[in-house]
Each structure stands twice: as structure tokens, then as C-alpha cells.
Amino acid sequence: MIKIIKRCILNYDFLFFIVSNLYGLINGFKKVTINKNEVCIIEKNKKFILSYHTRVYAFDVIREFNYYTSSVEGIFKHNLYEYNFSKPGLHKIPNKNIDFYYTFLPEGIETNDIYLKYLDIKSGDYILDLGAYCGLSTYTFSKAVGDEGLVISVEPDIQNFNALEKNVKNFNLKNVNIINCAIWSEDTELEFINDGNMGSAVSTLIDRYSNKTKINAFSLDSIVSKFNLAKVNAIKMDIEGSEYKVFTNLSQFINVYKPKFIIEIHKNNSGVIDCKFFEKIFAENNYSFEIRKQSEKGIFPLIFAYPKVN
Image (cartoon, rainbow, N blue to C red; front, side, top):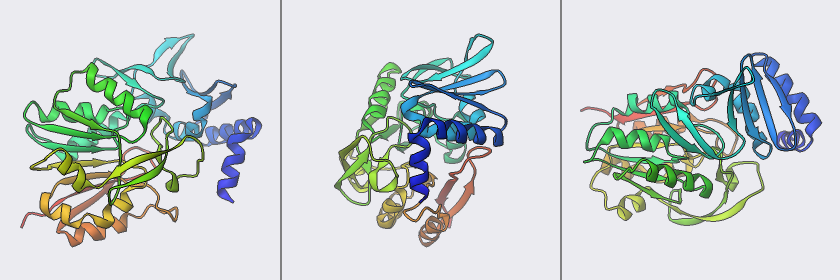
């Protein structure tokens, strides 16, 4: 029933307009306007623009407005700071003096700062960036590990992967290898929803039915073998619900490599964010475990886990 209601809201402009504006009022008096090409979310002197076909993300932007608008610099137009994500393009990253290519939403600067703080990345470290999106975390990790380190970045969505590849080339990140695949508990082929956005996922994990394609999926053991990695110091994982499947077959990998983990936890197939599932697995493998929010109103928590010192 909930899925049907969601589809009705997204498929009928009048319903979407009413519901999104009500949600905007609840979340800080934001105004939402729509036309056939764009959805605009306005609060005070800021306007965030989405393409109409990515309007499913409007509610995330309404709820996390400050999170997204603080992640890129706005362009001042008509007495408003405009954040235009109606199409792929370059956006300036605050405090980094770089222009970064995004598909349809920015990655959170707050979240990237959390990655660096908790993973405590050092020069020479080997990092797996699983669910790299357009590559801001990849860029951040690349600078942190230096010339002697290595970043393996995995992104399944082909539009996001192309943006990741573009950013890696633009910034000449020679210590980064990228691969267009999904991460799973085993090597297989999966049906995947290519949204060209942060929410792209295995089709069984989300309630969207467009842009389906087949994609190769690999276990972490296969990724390590493919790149002949002698060590894995840290793993960032943001794979839209696939983390539950990956962790059903990960204990041997954990015991061999003992990496630090930071994981964005999504809903499982029952619609529940089940942090206890991961806490149990990490406890069985002698890991310490912490949970923290990645933003003020963020739905999906971050789990940080690291080997206990004996």
C-alpha cells in the first residue's frame, strides 16, 4: 500500500505539488515549484533545482536542505543562491577550490569529513571505496593515502561511473583504480536500477521499475584478488542495502585483512534499518562498533567498526 501511495504521489503532478509543499512546511517552511523539466525547492535566499525525472529525491533534499546546499557553492542569481542539479555538470566544492563533476546530487562534505576522521587514513594505506558515486570520497581518500597508497573505487551505476571516471582523470588521481560493478556476497549477475543518482541499487532493494539493466557483481574476495591487494586498511561502504547480503559471507575476509569499516546502513528487505545485524557480526569477529548520524536529520546512520586491540 505504501509503495502504491508513493507511486501515485510521483506520477500525478498535483499530488506531488501538494504533498511536497506540505512536507516543505513541516521541514522549515520550504516552497516547492514544479514544471515539466524541473523541481525547485526554495528556502529564504537559496534555491535547489532538481530535474523532473529525479523528483523522487525532492523529499530528501527538503529534509536535508542544509546538508546538500553546504556541499557545493551556490551561484548568485536574481537575489537567490542557486544550486542547479537539473542536469550533470561541474560544481565548486567549498574550501577545496576544485570544480567537481556530478550527475544529479552532490555528495555531503559533512559525510566525507566523517570518513576521514573515523577511518584515520594514513599515507600508504589501501582503501576500498564501495559505492563511490561520482568520486568525492575517492578524491578525498586519494589525497590522504598519497603516492604510496591505493584507492579501489567501485560504482555500479553507469552514469555515476562515467562521472567518477571523468573526475579521476580531471584530477590525475594516479593512485586510484575504478571498476564498474556491484558488490555482493558472491560473483554473479544482478538486475540493477541505473538512476544516475545516489539511490541506484539492485532492483530487489528499491521500489522503482525504470532503467533496469544487468550488471556484474563481485565479492570482496574477488575484488582483492582482481587487484592483487596485499592489504586492505579501510573500507567505506555505501551500497544502498546490499550491505546485508555482503555481510552474510564476510567473516573470513574480516579475519584475514582486519580493515576498519565505515558503512551507511540502509533498510533491509523488511524495510528496517537493522544495525543489530552488523553489530552481531562485528562482535563475533572481535571488533569494536559505533553508530553515529551523518547529518542532523539523516535517516541512514553510519556504522564505524574497527578491530579490538588485544
